[in-house]
Length: 320
Image 1 (cartoon, one colour):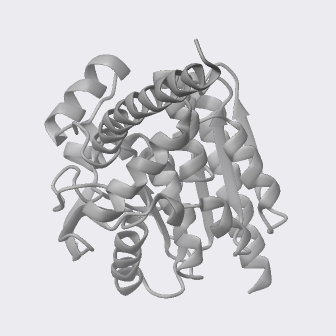
Image 2 (cartoon, one colour):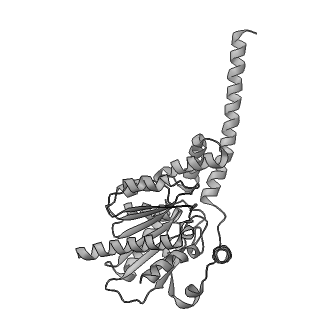
Image 3 (cartoon, helix red, strand yellow):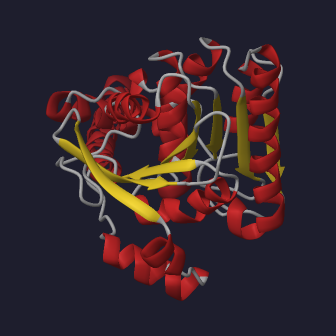
């Protein structure tokens, strides 16, 4: 067979294989985008039932003891709904913790963290991100729209508790990404606890794609991002918490499970090294998977959060 026929066959085979791979990549990209932006989400009742059964959660204080007030603010995709949990413990300065839940969850998942702050005399705000729980919205954007929604919640918090209130943000997973992205929008935040956040969306999606499908992230993530930009106006490249960390001088406590295979601990390590404030901390929790640090070592988790916010509060009080 002449050499040019062999070359033509090889080139044809490569073209066919490339076309087949692009078809496969497009199918996987569609699935990736669906899982990211319109996942199956727990209702409030499902979240309560799941956590009661599998995590031993008790809601007596939430249902019968805590003094609560519901609120709603205007978000990017509609109403953002949540609750204020008032704390009547006397304090020289109002203290408020705003807690952001993770992907697929809702405000119910924030109650366990609310207890840490409530025990320390904080008023606590929990709410549902757009698309989740009782909030409006037909999709989520893993921090892109959510940071703007959080800013509206913080406007409400400042109106209610005053511009001088000591304000702490706590976020888990997607919620942690959201509170970190918030740092480039406003400067009236006193401290942040970021539990298992990713540092960069594109990097994270490429890692997750390889782990979940054993296919390289390129061009799957790029195709998915193109679909996302056209359908939702959500550009993965706009959500880079590490850039927001670099842009601020707010103390941040990074917490990450050492055994997290969903969002690798290196994401928090990179952001910790990028942080500007000398009071920032990094805590890697042994034997903890994704968003499981609170459960893997509850005593250590409570101690880390408590000591961190106490340190920042004392440091600010000394400056006043």
